Length: 80
Image (cartoon, rainbow, N blue to C red):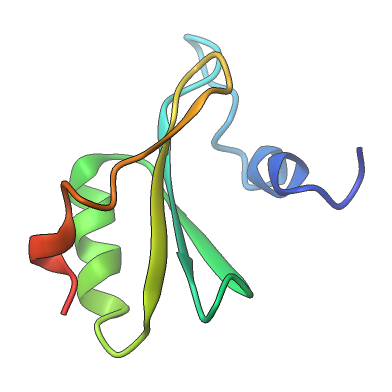
């Protein structure tokens, strides 16, 4: 489906690698209007530092099989 979040993710060049699909984190902010992807826990924490002035509404872990799980509670300590 063109224009979907998954298409954006694929177009970033991060969904496919030598080992196939990779696990990613999605950070949603600005009342759901904006999002960014982190490629690792370290990336996620860096993004959270950069987005410290934004209201983060969701952090999801996206597994290789496409399943999403909210992990915002785990990372509350990094959200101001």
